[in-house]
Length: 181
Image 1 (cartoon, rainbow, N blue to C red):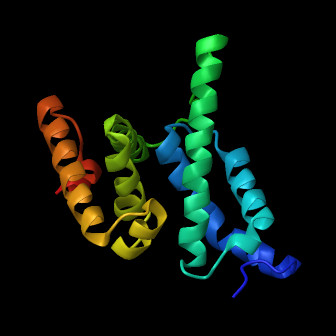
Image 2 (cartoon, helix red, strand yellow):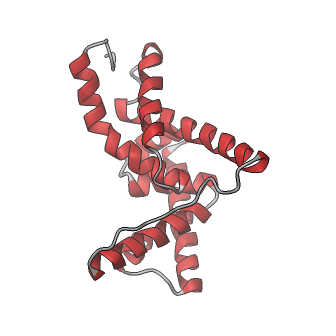
């Protein structure tokens, strides 16, 4: 089955199904919210490489493989740019004000972002796909080109490391603690 055969409606459906999940994945992977262009780039790459889709993976896992590779390329370029020229590239600003409950939840999510970003790459990838995006172990294994048992072991070790970080820093909250237990 071809993912995209040039049918405009099929392309729009595909974008609707996966763009939010890709956005979330790239935010976690890259550690910032400025990923809209990258999501668009992932879909453009998928459209251009549609002939390479063999059907061995699902549409979703194939697309997330493209997103992962694109994120890795993006990180390489960003590191080079930072090193060469622009130390202020990742200035973040958040002027949103919300009720206390939303603020607390946002802080907990930010703590999770930070903790996940501290993990080594192999742990982070499994946490993002399997733990946060909700991929199955088989889908995660396809994206990362490893075995399902490797996904389970890596996820266990990553959660153990996150739990240790939480205990050492006595930070977290209900959201964070429920994730690492």
